Image (cartoon, rainbow, N blue to C red; front, side, top):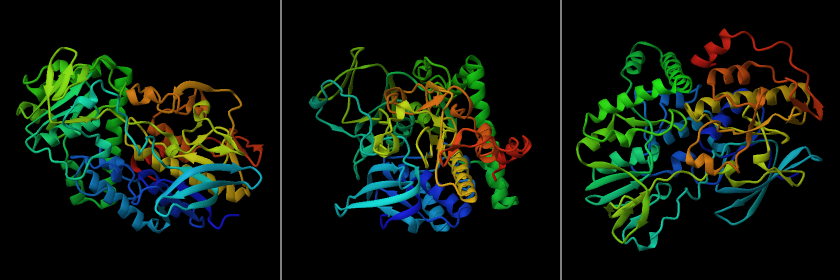
Length: 508
Protein backbone atom coordinates (compact mmCIF):
# COMPACT_ATOMS: atom_id res chain seq x y z
CA UNK A 1 0.00 0.00 0.00
CA UNK A 2 1.06 3.57 -0.61
CA UNK A 3 2.13 5.64 2.38
CA UNK A 4 -0.66 8.06 1.35
CA UNK A 5 -3.78 6.00 2.04
CA UNK A 6 -7.13 7.49 3.01
CA UNK A 7 -10.64 6.20 3.49
CA UNK A 8 -11.89 8.96 1.17
CA UNK A 9 -10.05 11.11 -1.37
CA UNK A 10 -11.74 14.25 -2.65
CA UNK A 11 -10.46 15.85 -5.84
CA UNK A 12 -10.95 19.62 -5.84
CA UNK A 13 -11.14 22.20 -3.05
CA UNK A 14 -13.86 24.40 -4.51
CA UNK A 15 -17.41 24.84 -3.28
CA UNK A 16 -18.22 21.15 -3.88
CA UNK A 17 -15.02 19.72 -2.40
CA UNK A 18 -15.18 21.80 0.77
CA UNK A 19 -18.88 20.97 1.14
CA UNK A 20 -18.19 17.23 0.79
CA UNK A 21 -15.35 17.42 3.32
CA UNK A 22 -17.50 19.26 5.85
CA UNK A 23 -20.23 16.65 5.58
CA UNK A 24 -17.65 13.88 6.07
CA UNK A 25 -16.38 15.57 9.23
CA UNK A 26 -19.92 15.95 10.54
CA UNK A 27 -21.45 12.63 9.50
CA UNK A 28 -18.50 10.20 9.19
CA UNK A 29 -16.18 11.47 11.95
CA UNK A 30 -14.04 8.34 12.02
CA UNK A 31 -13.06 8.47 8.36
CA UNK A 32 -9.64 9.65 7.19
CA UNK A 33 -9.71 11.88 4.13
CA UNK A 34 -7.69 14.32 2.07
CA UNK A 35 -8.53 16.88 -0.61
CA UNK A 36 -6.19 17.03 -3.60
CA UNK A 37 -6.23 20.51 -5.15
CA UNK A 38 -4.22 21.55 -8.17
CA UNK A 39 -4.30 25.27 -7.38
CA UNK A 40 -2.42 26.91 -4.52
CA UNK A 41 -5.61 28.09 -2.86
CA UNK A 42 -9.09 26.79 -2.15
CA UNK A 43 -12.19 28.29 -3.73
CA UNK A 44 -12.23 26.74 -7.20
CA UNK A 45 -14.17 29.03 -9.53
CA UNK A 46 -13.99 31.85 -6.98
CA UNK A 47 -10.20 31.67 -6.88
CA UNK A 48 -9.77 31.31 -10.64
CA UNK A 49 -11.90 34.14 -12.02
CA UNK A 50 -10.63 37.67 -11.34
CA UNK A 51 -12.42 39.79 -13.94
CA UNK A 52 -14.10 43.07 -12.86
CA UNK A 53 -17.43 42.60 -11.11
CA UNK A 54 -17.12 38.79 -10.73
CA UNK A 55 -20.08 37.72 -8.59
CA UNK A 56 -22.55 34.93 -7.96
CA UNK A 57 -25.31 34.35 -10.48
CA UNK A 58 -27.42 32.63 -7.82
CA UNK A 59 -28.83 34.09 -4.64
CA UNK A 60 -26.49 33.48 -1.73
CA UNK A 61 -29.15 32.20 0.65
CA UNK A 62 -29.53 29.09 -1.51
CA UNK A 63 -25.93 29.09 -2.75
CA UNK A 64 -24.67 28.99 0.84
CA UNK A 65 -24.28 25.64 2.58
CA UNK A 66 -27.27 24.27 4.50
CA UNK A 67 -25.19 23.88 7.66
CA UNK A 68 -23.56 27.34 7.68
CA UNK A 69 -25.77 30.41 7.21
CA UNK A 70 -24.86 33.12 4.73
CA UNK A 71 -25.28 36.26 6.82
CA UNK A 72 -26.15 39.81 5.86
CA UNK A 73 -28.66 40.93 3.29
CA UNK A 74 -26.44 40.66 0.20
CA UNK A 75 -28.21 38.49 -2.37
CA UNK A 76 -25.57 38.50 -5.13
CA UNK A 77 -22.12 38.40 -3.57
CA UNK A 78 -18.81 39.35 -5.20
CA UNK A 79 -16.23 36.66 -5.89
CA UNK A 80 -13.91 37.63 -3.02
CA UNK A 81 -16.75 37.41 -0.49
CA UNK A 82 -17.75 33.97 -1.75
CA UNK A 83 -14.18 32.68 -1.57
CA UNK A 84 -13.90 34.04 1.96
CA UNK A 85 -17.16 32.30 2.91
CA UNK A 86 -15.82 28.98 1.57
CA UNK A 87 -12.50 29.49 3.41
CA UNK A 88 -14.20 30.32 6.71
CA UNK A 89 -16.47 27.29 6.31
CA UNK A 90 -13.41 25.06 5.82
CA UNK A 91 -11.72 26.51 8.90
CA UNK A 92 -14.78 26.29 11.14
CA UNK A 93 -15.24 22.63 10.20
CA UNK A 94 -11.52 21.84 10.51
CA UNK A 95 -11.07 20.65 6.94
CA UNK A 96 -8.52 23.19 5.67
CA UNK A 97 -5.63 21.18 7.14
CA UNK A 98 -6.72 18.20 5.02
CA UNK A 99 -6.10 20.05 1.72
CA UNK A 100 -2.96 19.19 -0.25
CA UNK A 101 -2.29 22.02 -2.68
CA UNK A 102 -0.42 22.05 -5.98
CA UNK A 103 -1.29 18.45 -6.87
CA UNK A 104 -2.50 17.70 -10.40
CA UNK A 105 -4.06 14.25 -10.46
CA UNK A 106 -2.89 12.53 -13.63
CA UNK A 107 -4.36 9.05 -13.26
CA UNK A 108 -6.96 7.25 -11.18
CA UNK A 109 -7.32 3.48 -11.50
CA UNK A 110 -9.58 1.19 -9.49
CA UNK A 111 -7.91 -2.07 -8.46
CA UNK A 112 -10.40 -4.90 -8.11
CA UNK A 113 -7.73 -7.01 -6.44
CA UNK A 114 -6.80 -4.47 -3.76
CA UNK A 115 -10.32 -2.98 -3.51
CA UNK A 116 -9.06 0.59 -3.70
CA UNK A 117 -8.37 3.52 -5.99
CA UNK A 118 -4.76 4.18 -6.97
CA UNK A 119 -4.01 7.77 -7.90
CA UNK A 120 -0.92 9.35 -9.43
CA UNK A 121 -0.49 13.07 -8.84
CA UNK A 122 2.12 15.53 -10.05
CA UNK A 123 3.35 18.06 -7.51
CA UNK A 124 3.54 21.06 -9.83
CA UNK A 125 5.85 22.94 -7.43
CA UNK A 126 8.52 20.27 -6.96
CA UNK A 127 7.95 18.30 -10.16
CA UNK A 128 7.76 15.09 -8.14
CA UNK A 129 5.18 12.36 -8.61
CA UNK A 130 3.11 11.36 -5.58
CA UNK A 131 1.00 8.25 -5.13
CA UNK A 132 -2.25 7.94 -3.19
CA UNK A 133 -4.71 5.16 -2.51
CA UNK A 134 -8.27 5.46 -1.25
CA UNK A 135 -11.19 3.20 -0.45
CA UNK A 136 -13.60 5.76 -1.91
CA UNK A 137 -13.07 8.51 -4.50
CA UNK A 138 -15.18 11.66 -4.89
CA UNK A 139 -14.73 14.00 -7.87
CA UNK A 140 -15.50 17.63 -6.97
CA UNK A 141 -13.86 19.34 -9.93
CA UNK A 142 -16.82 21.16 -11.45
CA UNK A 143 -17.43 20.76 -15.14
CA UNK A 144 -15.07 23.03 -17.03
CA UNK A 145 -11.44 23.29 -18.03
CA UNK A 146 -9.52 25.58 -15.66
CA UNK A 147 -6.58 25.88 -18.06
CA UNK A 148 -8.52 27.48 -20.87
CA UNK A 149 -11.96 28.82 -21.67
CA UNK A 150 -13.72 28.38 -24.98
CA UNK A 151 -12.81 30.85 -27.68
CA UNK A 152 -13.65 30.46 -31.38
CA UNK A 153 -10.97 31.19 -33.95
CA UNK A 154 -12.05 34.57 -35.28
CA UNK A 155 -11.03 35.46 -38.87
CA UNK A 156 -8.40 38.20 -38.91
CA UNK A 157 -7.67 37.87 -35.20
CA UNK A 158 -3.95 38.46 -35.72
CA UNK A 159 -4.68 41.71 -37.56
CA UNK A 160 -6.14 43.39 -34.48
CA UNK A 161 -3.65 45.86 -32.97
CA UNK A 162 -5.34 46.18 -29.58
CA UNK A 163 -5.63 43.77 -26.66
CA UNK A 164 -7.62 40.53 -26.60
CA UNK A 165 -8.38 39.39 -23.04
CA UNK A 166 -10.28 36.22 -22.11
CA UNK A 167 -12.21 36.57 -18.83
CA UNK A 168 -10.80 33.28 -17.54
CA UNK A 169 -7.26 34.70 -17.77
CA UNK A 170 -7.74 38.28 -16.67
CA UNK A 171 -4.39 40.10 -16.40
CA UNK A 172 -3.79 41.84 -13.10
CA UNK A 173 -3.96 45.61 -13.41
CA UNK A 174 -5.53 45.74 -16.89
CA UNK A 175 -6.04 49.44 -17.63
CA UNK A 176 -9.27 50.04 -19.53
CA UNK A 177 -10.02 53.54 -18.22
CA UNK A 178 -11.06 55.84 -21.05
CA UNK A 179 -10.82 53.06 -23.63
CA UNK A 180 -13.36 51.53 -25.99
CA UNK A 181 -14.22 47.94 -25.16
CA UNK A 182 -16.16 45.22 -27.00
CA UNK A 183 -17.38 42.27 -24.95
CA UNK A 184 -18.33 39.31 -27.17
CA UNK A 185 -21.10 37.24 -25.62
CA UNK A 186 -24.46 37.48 -23.87
CA UNK A 187 -24.10 35.09 -20.95
CA UNK A 188 -23.55 35.70 -17.24
CA UNK A 189 -19.94 36.84 -17.69
CA UNK A 190 -20.81 39.44 -20.33
CA UNK A 191 -23.83 40.66 -18.33
CA UNK A 192 -21.49 41.21 -15.37
CA UNK A 193 -18.56 42.72 -17.27
CA UNK A 194 -20.39 45.29 -19.38
CA UNK A 195 -21.88 47.52 -16.65
CA UNK A 196 -18.82 47.13 -14.40
CA UNK A 197 -16.34 48.15 -17.09
CA UNK A 198 -18.66 50.93 -18.30
CA UNK A 199 -17.97 52.77 -15.04
CA UNK A 200 -14.40 53.55 -16.20
CA UNK A 201 -14.25 52.81 -19.93
CA UNK A 202 -15.03 55.38 -22.62
CA UNK A 203 -17.70 53.02 -23.97
CA UNK A 204 -18.51 49.31 -23.77
CA UNK A 205 -20.33 47.39 -26.50
CA UNK A 206 -21.85 43.99 -25.84
CA UNK A 207 -21.70 42.08 -29.11
CA UNK A 208 -24.06 39.11 -29.19
CA UNK A 209 -25.16 36.64 -31.84
CA UNK A 210 -28.49 36.21 -30.07
CA UNK A 211 -30.14 37.64 -26.95
CA UNK A 212 -30.48 35.95 -23.55
CA UNK A 213 -33.37 36.07 -21.09
CA UNK A 214 -32.49 38.57 -18.38
CA UNK A 215 -33.92 39.04 -14.90
CA UNK A 216 -33.11 42.10 -12.75
CA UNK A 217 -32.51 41.22 -9.10
CA UNK A 218 -31.78 43.58 -6.19
CA UNK A 219 -28.40 42.98 -4.58
CA UNK A 220 -29.80 43.45 -1.06
CA UNK A 221 -32.71 41.55 0.44
CA UNK A 222 -34.52 43.93 2.80
CA UNK A 223 -36.95 41.25 3.97
CA UNK A 224 -34.06 39.04 5.05
CA UNK A 225 -32.36 41.94 6.84
CA UNK A 226 -35.62 42.44 8.73
CA UNK A 227 -35.84 38.75 9.64
CA UNK A 228 -32.25 38.77 10.89
CA UNK A 229 -33.09 41.56 13.33
CA UNK A 230 -35.93 39.67 15.04
CA UNK A 231 -35.06 35.98 14.59
CA UNK A 232 -32.06 33.77 15.42
CA UNK A 233 -29.51 33.64 12.61
CA UNK A 234 -30.18 30.03 11.60
CA UNK A 235 -33.96 30.47 11.63
CA UNK A 236 -33.79 33.59 9.43
CA UNK A 237 -31.45 31.74 7.05
CA UNK A 238 -33.73 28.71 6.76
CA UNK A 239 -36.82 30.83 6.14
CA UNK A 240 -35.03 32.83 3.44
CA UNK A 241 -33.74 29.63 1.80
CA UNK A 242 -37.23 28.16 1.82
CA UNK A 243 -38.72 31.24 0.17
CA UNK A 244 -35.98 31.51 -2.47
CA UNK A 245 -36.05 27.81 -3.33
CA UNK A 246 -39.83 28.03 -3.78
CA UNK A 247 -39.57 31.10 -6.03
CA UNK A 248 -36.80 29.55 -8.15
CA UNK A 249 -38.69 26.29 -8.55
CA UNK A 250 -41.88 28.14 -9.48
CA UNK A 251 -40.15 30.22 -12.17
CA UNK A 252 -38.47 27.16 -13.66
CA UNK A 253 -41.55 24.95 -13.60
CA UNK A 254 -43.83 27.62 -15.06
CA UNK A 255 -41.24 28.27 -17.78
CA UNK A 256 -41.31 24.60 -18.78
CA UNK A 257 -45.09 24.23 -18.58
CA UNK A 258 -46.20 27.62 -19.95
CA UNK A 259 -43.29 28.95 -22.02
CA UNK A 260 -45.32 31.50 -23.99
CA UNK A 261 -46.81 33.09 -20.86
CA UNK A 262 -43.43 33.20 -19.10
CA UNK A 263 -41.79 34.63 -22.20
CA UNK A 264 -44.31 37.48 -22.15
CA UNK A 265 -43.64 38.01 -18.44
CA UNK A 266 -39.85 38.14 -18.78
CA UNK A 267 -39.97 40.46 -21.79
CA UNK A 268 -42.44 42.80 -20.07
CA UNK A 269 -40.05 43.13 -17.12
CA UNK A 270 -37.19 44.03 -19.50
CA UNK A 271 -39.37 46.49 -21.41
CA UNK A 272 -40.03 48.41 -18.20
CA UNK A 273 -36.31 48.38 -17.41
CA UNK A 274 -35.13 49.80 -20.74
CA UNK A 275 -37.99 52.33 -20.74
CA UNK A 276 -37.98 52.82 -24.52
CA UNK A 277 -34.28 53.72 -24.62
CA UNK A 278 -33.08 50.49 -26.22
CA UNK A 279 -34.35 48.33 -29.07
CA UNK A 280 -36.20 45.30 -27.64
CA UNK A 281 -34.82 43.08 -30.41
CA UNK A 282 -31.58 42.99 -28.38
CA UNK A 283 -33.50 41.39 -25.49
CA UNK A 284 -35.86 39.03 -27.33
CA UNK A 285 -34.41 35.49 -27.56
CA UNK A 286 -35.52 33.06 -30.27
CA UNK A 287 -35.87 30.21 -27.75
CA UNK A 288 -38.11 29.52 -24.75
CA UNK A 289 -37.25 30.51 -21.17
CA UNK A 290 -34.89 28.02 -19.50
CA UNK A 291 -33.87 26.31 -22.71
CA UNK A 292 -30.72 28.10 -21.64
CA UNK A 293 -29.83 29.54 -18.25
CA UNK A 294 -31.50 32.75 -17.15
CA UNK A 295 -29.03 35.63 -16.57
CA UNK A 296 -29.40 37.80 -13.50
CA UNK A 297 -28.83 41.58 -13.78
CA UNK A 298 -27.73 42.96 -10.40
CA UNK A 299 -29.76 46.05 -9.44
CA UNK A 300 -30.56 46.47 -13.15
CA UNK A 301 -27.00 47.81 -13.65
CA UNK A 302 -26.82 46.74 -17.31
CA UNK A 303 -29.99 48.68 -18.15
CA UNK A 304 -28.71 51.74 -16.29
CA UNK A 305 -25.46 51.68 -18.28
CA UNK A 306 -27.39 51.40 -21.54
CA UNK A 307 -29.73 54.28 -20.68
CA UNK A 308 -26.77 56.45 -19.60
CA UNK A 309 -25.07 55.90 -22.97
CA UNK A 310 -22.04 54.28 -21.32
CA UNK A 311 -22.83 50.96 -22.98
CA UNK A 312 -24.63 49.63 -26.03
CA UNK A 313 -25.65 46.29 -27.53
CA UNK A 314 -25.00 45.02 -31.05
CA UNK A 315 -26.83 41.89 -32.20
CA UNK A 316 -25.00 40.59 -35.25
CA UNK A 317 -22.47 38.06 -36.50
CA UNK A 318 -18.73 38.67 -36.79
CA UNK A 319 -17.29 38.79 -40.29
CA UNK A 320 -13.70 39.38 -39.18
CA UNK A 321 -11.39 41.25 -36.85
CA UNK A 322 -9.64 44.27 -38.34
CA UNK A 323 -6.68 46.34 -37.22
CA UNK A 324 -8.94 48.69 -35.28
CA UNK A 325 -11.86 46.51 -34.22
CA UNK A 326 -14.51 44.12 -35.51
CA UNK A 327 -16.35 44.16 -38.81
CA UNK A 328 -19.85 42.72 -38.60
CA UNK A 329 -21.72 40.85 -41.32
CA UNK A 330 -24.15 43.76 -41.55
CA UNK A 331 -21.21 45.91 -42.70
CA UNK A 332 -20.99 47.90 -39.45
CA UNK A 333 -17.54 48.19 -37.89
CA UNK A 334 -16.99 48.43 -34.14
CA UNK A 335 -13.84 50.37 -33.34
CA UNK A 336 -12.27 49.27 -30.08
CA UNK A 337 -9.10 49.17 -28.02
CA UNK A 338 -9.86 45.98 -26.10
CA UNK A 339 -11.80 42.87 -27.16
CA UNK A 340 -13.05 40.49 -24.49
CA UNK A 341 -14.34 37.14 -25.84
CA UNK A 342 -16.77 36.12 -23.07
CA UNK A 343 -17.63 33.17 -25.27
CA UNK A 344 -18.14 30.47 -22.68
CA UNK A 345 -16.56 27.53 -20.97
CA UNK A 346 -14.72 24.50 -22.26
CA UNK A 347 -16.45 21.62 -20.49
CA UNK A 348 -14.20 19.02 -18.94
CA UNK A 349 -15.22 16.25 -16.56
CA UNK A 350 -13.16 15.28 -13.50
CA UNK A 351 -10.56 17.95 -14.19
CA UNK A 352 -9.40 16.09 -17.28
CA UNK A 353 -8.67 12.85 -15.40
CA UNK A 354 -9.54 9.73 -17.39
CA UNK A 355 -10.45 7.17 -14.73
CA UNK A 356 -9.99 3.47 -15.33
CA UNK A 357 -11.22 0.27 -13.75
CA UNK A 358 -8.63 -2.50 -13.61
CA UNK A 359 -6.67 -0.74 -16.34
CA UNK A 360 -9.62 -0.18 -18.71
CA UNK A 361 -10.52 3.47 -19.35
CA UNK A 362 -13.99 4.60 -18.32
CA UNK A 363 -15.53 6.43 -21.31
CA UNK A 364 -17.98 8.76 -19.59
CA UNK A 365 -20.15 9.46 -22.64
CA UNK A 366 -20.96 5.76 -22.76
CA UNK A 367 -21.96 5.69 -19.11
CA UNK A 368 -25.21 6.51 -17.37
CA UNK A 369 -25.39 8.31 -14.01
CA UNK A 370 -27.06 6.81 -10.96
CA UNK A 371 -29.03 9.39 -8.94
CA UNK A 372 -26.79 11.97 -10.60
CA UNK A 373 -24.08 10.99 -8.12
CA UNK A 374 -22.45 7.70 -9.14
CA UNK A 375 -21.24 6.45 -12.54
CA UNK A 376 -22.68 3.13 -13.68
CA UNK A 377 -20.11 0.34 -13.48
CA UNK A 378 -17.49 2.36 -11.57
CA UNK A 379 -16.89 1.03 -8.04
CA UNK A 380 -16.56 3.15 -4.89
CA UNK A 381 -16.65 6.47 -6.71
CA UNK A 382 -18.92 9.48 -7.06
CA UNK A 383 -19.13 12.90 -8.67
CA UNK A 384 -20.61 15.91 -6.93
CA UNK A 385 -22.45 17.71 -9.71
CA UNK A 386 -24.65 20.68 -8.81
CA UNK A 387 -27.79 22.10 -10.34
CA UNK A 388 -27.93 24.24 -13.46
CA UNK A 389 -31.44 25.64 -12.97
CA UNK A 390 -31.05 26.70 -9.31
CA UNK A 391 -28.09 27.15 -6.97
CA UNK A 392 -25.30 24.62 -7.55
CA UNK A 393 -24.76 24.12 -3.82
CA UNK A 394 -28.27 22.86 -3.10
CA UNK A 395 -27.29 19.65 -4.90
CA UNK A 396 -23.83 19.59 -3.32
CA UNK A 397 -25.36 19.39 0.17
CA UNK A 398 -27.81 16.57 -0.49
CA UNK A 399 -25.37 14.58 -2.70
CA UNK A 400 -22.72 14.78 0.04
CA UNK A 401 -25.30 13.69 2.63
CA UNK A 402 -26.20 10.72 0.43
CA UNK A 403 -22.56 9.65 0.08
CA UNK A 404 -22.07 9.85 3.85
CA UNK A 405 -25.20 7.69 4.31
CA UNK A 406 -23.79 5.21 1.80
CA UNK A 407 -20.36 5.07 3.46
CA UNK A 408 -21.90 4.60 6.90
CA UNK A 409 -24.17 1.80 5.64
CA UNK A 410 -21.18 0.03 4.08
CA UNK A 411 -19.38 0.19 7.41
CA UNK A 412 -22.43 -1.11 9.26
CA UNK A 413 -22.87 -4.04 6.85
CA UNK A 414 -19.14 -4.72 6.48
CA UNK A 415 -19.16 -4.05 2.71
CA UNK A 416 -15.92 -3.10 0.94
CA UNK A 417 -17.26 -2.27 -2.53
CA UNK A 418 -20.34 -0.68 -4.07
CA UNK A 419 -21.17 -0.23 -7.74
CA UNK A 420 -24.32 0.89 -9.55
CA UNK A 421 -25.51 -1.56 -12.23
CA UNK A 422 -27.88 -0.62 -15.05
CA UNK A 423 -29.31 -4.05 -15.84
CA UNK A 424 -32.32 -2.55 -17.63
CA UNK A 425 -30.30 -0.78 -20.34
CA UNK A 426 -31.93 2.56 -19.48
CA UNK A 427 -29.28 4.79 -21.08
CA UNK A 428 -30.85 7.76 -22.90
CA UNK A 429 -29.45 10.44 -25.19
CA UNK A 430 -29.77 13.40 -22.79
CA UNK A 431 -26.60 14.31 -20.91
CA UNK A 432 -26.55 14.88 -17.16
CA UNK A 433 -27.12 18.57 -17.94
CA UNK A 434 -30.56 17.66 -19.24
CA UNK A 435 -32.54 19.85 -21.61
CA UNK A 436 -30.31 22.94 -21.58
CA UNK A 437 -29.12 23.70 -25.13
CA UNK A 438 -26.48 26.35 -24.43
CA UNK A 439 -23.54 26.34 -26.83
CA UNK A 440 -21.01 25.14 -24.26
CA UNK A 441 -23.23 22.14 -23.43
CA UNK A 442 -23.80 21.21 -27.08
CA UNK A 443 -20.05 21.38 -27.73
CA UNK A 444 -19.42 18.92 -24.90
CA UNK A 445 -22.01 16.28 -25.81
CA UNK A 446 -19.23 13.79 -26.56
CA UNK A 447 -17.65 14.27 -23.09
CA UNK A 448 -20.63 14.19 -20.75
CA UNK A 449 -22.14 11.12 -19.09
CA UNK A 450 -25.71 10.29 -20.04
CA UNK A 451 -28.80 10.13 -17.91
CA UNK A 452 -31.25 7.29 -18.15
CA UNK A 453 -34.84 7.19 -19.31
CA UNK A 454 -36.25 5.82 -16.07
CA UNK A 455 -35.77 5.20 -12.36
CA UNK A 456 -32.66 6.43 -10.52
CA UNK A 457 -30.86 6.89 -13.83
CA UNK A 458 -33.06 9.81 -14.84
CA UNK A 459 -31.93 13.27 -13.72
CA UNK A 460 -34.81 15.46 -12.62
CA UNK A 461 -33.10 18.81 -11.84
CA UNK A 462 -35.87 18.93 -9.22
CA UNK A 463 -34.60 19.80 -5.76
CA UNK A 464 -37.64 18.59 -3.81
CA UNK A 465 -37.61 15.28 -5.65
CA UNK A 466 -33.87 14.87 -5.12
CA UNK A 467 -34.19 15.57 -1.38
CA UNK A 468 -36.57 12.62 -1.15
CA UNK A 469 -34.31 10.38 -3.26
CA UNK A 470 -30.96 11.28 -1.73
CA UNK A 471 -31.85 12.10 1.86
CA UNK A 472 -34.68 9.66 2.61
CA UNK A 473 -35.05 6.80 0.11
CA UNK A 474 -33.37 3.52 1.15
CA UNK A 475 -29.73 3.10 0.08
CA UNK A 476 -30.28 -0.60 -0.71
CA UNK A 477 -32.76 -0.11 -3.52
CA UNK A 478 -31.98 -3.05 -5.79
CA UNK A 479 -29.78 -1.04 -8.16
CA UNK A 480 -26.57 -1.09 -6.11
CA UNK A 481 -24.26 -4.08 -5.96
CA UNK A 482 -22.30 -4.57 -2.73
CA UNK A 483 -19.26 -6.87 -2.70
CA UNK A 484 -20.43 -8.30 -6.01
CA UNK A 485 -23.97 -9.05 -4.87
CA UNK A 486 -27.11 -7.16 -5.88
CA UNK A 487 -28.76 -5.37 -2.98
CA UNK A 488 -32.39 -6.05 -2.23
CA UNK A 489 -34.86 -3.18 -2.23
CA UNK A 490 -34.86 -1.54 1.18
CA UNK A 491 -37.55 -2.00 3.77
CA UNK A 492 -40.29 0.47 2.88
CA UNK A 493 -40.08 3.64 0.86
CA UNK A 494 -39.23 7.20 1.83
CA UNK A 495 -40.77 8.10 5.15
CA UNK A 496 -43.76 10.08 3.99
CA UNK A 497 -43.86 13.25 1.93
CA UNK A 498 -44.09 15.98 4.54
CA UNK A 499 -40.73 15.25 6.10
CA UNK A 500 -38.78 15.45 2.79
CA UNK A 501 -40.70 18.61 1.88
CA UNK A 502 -39.97 20.23 5.22
CA UNK A 503 -36.33 19.12 5.03
CA UNK A 504 -35.94 20.39 1.46
CA UNK A 505 -37.22 23.84 2.29
CA UNK A 506 -35.79 24.34 5.76
CA UNK A 507 -32.73 22.08 5.79
CA UNK A 508 -31.89 19.03 7.81
